[in-house]
Length: 81
Image 1 (cartoon, rainbow, N blue to C red):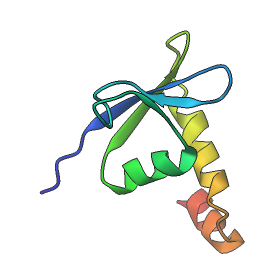
Image 2 (tube, rainbow, N blue to C red; image 1 turned 90 degrees about the horizontal axis):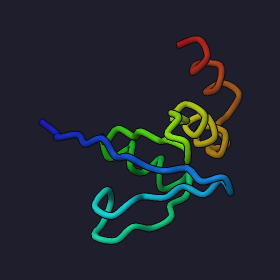
Image 3 (tube, rainbow, N blue to C red; image 1 turned 90 degrees about the vertical axis):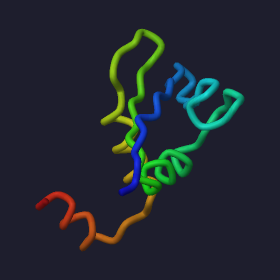
Image 4 (cartoon, rainbow, N blue to C red; image 1 turned 120 degrees about the vertical axis):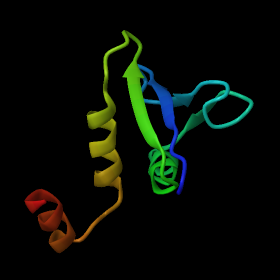
């Protein structure tokens, strides 16, 4: 059984995503949408909040999917569920 962890990320006004100390490594650092996709592929969950503490996880995950350049057929399957 794979242990999953919820990774808490911050989204700044400049659209950069930041992984605070201890979330993905011993040091805090900026991450890309590609990094977020990899974290999820590894079986983890993500929780992303903006500067005001608002949950923006769905917004960022939509950006992740859009950046993946999926085929029309795959996108239709996603929409249909």
